[in-house]
Amino acid sequence: MEIIFLIFILVLSVFLGFELISKVPATLHTPLMSGANAISGITLAGAFLASGMVDNEMGKYLGTAAVAFATVNVVGGYLVTDRMLGMFKSKKAGGKK
Amino acid sequence: MNIELLANLSYIVSAALFIFGLKMLGSPATARRGNLFSSMGMLIAVVAGLTAEGIVSYEYIAGGMVLGAIVGALAARLVGMTSMPEMVALFNGSGGAASLLVGWATLYGGGIDTFTAVTILLAILIGGLTFTGSLIAYAKLAEVMNSAAIVFKGQRIVNSLLLVGIVYASYQFCLDPGPESQWLYITLGLALLLGIMAVIPIGGADMPVVISLLNSYSGIAACAAGFAINNNILIVAGSLVGASGIILTNIMCKAMNRSLANVLFSGFGAVKQSKAIEGEVKPISVEDAYYLFEAASNVCFVPGYGMAVAQAQHVVKELGEILEANGCEVSYAIHPVAGRMPGHMNVLLAEADVPYEQLVEMDDINPRIENVDIAVVIGANDVVNPSAREDEDSPIYGMPIINVDQARTVFVLKRSMASGFSGVDNPLFFGENTRMLFGDAKESIQGVISEFG
Image (cartoon, rainbow over all chains, first blue to last red):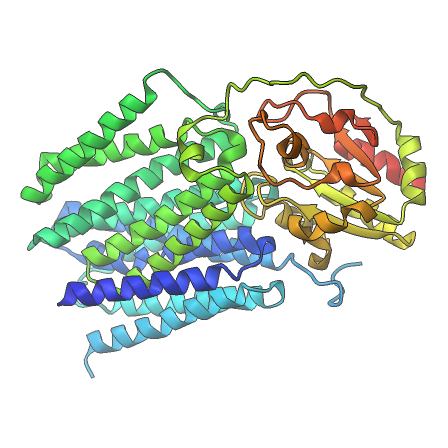
């Protein structure tokens, strides 16, 4: 039954994803991608479990590498997206002269 | 209340924050706050993940996080806006690698049923091909390797064999899953190879499609890893990313009027021009260009990858401001596949402080292009090539373009008469109302600016 629940979640979030993303204007497609990159760093939450296991050396190393890669995504992704979005300025807001 | 329930409740909160964050990306005015929301969601998910049962040692986790955070922060700080496509390619790759490793490490947990084995395998497969595919995409974008399509005889046969091999090895693995299975390593190796083989036949101008697709894969891999470890938030976040990548891929393909299969399997390489284009190229001097700019009341810039290469966005913006001060209406028309990734030109112009209201999409500018006095084409070629509209034999026929040839005057800033990436001649250059401004785009525009000065 658990599998069915997981698939249920999957299907609903795919639909939700399509709805949300198709509303993002072309101007923001690059930040959207880097933002999505950051979100895909969610693997981090899963990587903890693997690298926290002490009973197996190999599993621990693999998990730690996973933690490192996923953290690159999370930290790098959010920072670079923020940096980019900070550049988008409205005329009314003034920006720099 | 037990810890697991608490963790799951936090996952719900973070999923909601991701969704809000993506929703706020719908407008440049709220996008930055949206990103902040999304990152708070991530923080909550990470903290909740850390409380999971079964984690006994935190040293390795801390080590991995510190290392990753340093690399990520440095990369995000130091990357130039021109190199954003390379950066995103690398991030896609690192997302793929993380999912691959999580899947692999889960095998050591033991107690694997067939369903888990299949999902672990999917995480390894998709993660692996995302990883190497992204590295190749990076190498092509950064020009570490030749960005042209690499096509060889029997390529399809090799790739088909590779696929068959993966299916067979996966099947064998699932029969007897475990970390010691030799089929695991065979599958992994083949997946890594497939990533390389899948991206080498794709040329530089098709990179927007590839990056979007790899972006989607990195999400799908995270999703598969989520199934492998029974984690809701991985599934939700992974599928959001997967959906986002697929939508972008679709937009890019539509903008080139090509199917995804066509982009992935046929290099844009050797096309033959059916008709020789006749006509005369009319060069213009910087000084004459200045007189026309001075008199113009509606100017539209059409940037392409060449603007990124020449780093001309700042001078373009400067010229735009001077023209505005001169009472001229200025806009920037951006084709969906201009540049090397979706939205690449928008980011460059935003970096140069162009207000986003002036950035217009192809469909907005085309109906009113006849009112444009001067369309300035900077480093774009195929996306303004009228043969896409007129010449049925052209390889890019049917691709939607920005109809700059219908503007009153077109300035094309170009180094020389070389043809665009697709190797197709561009009749625009020979047009009645086209004037060629030869030379480095940045220097040419600087020249015009100093005439104004």
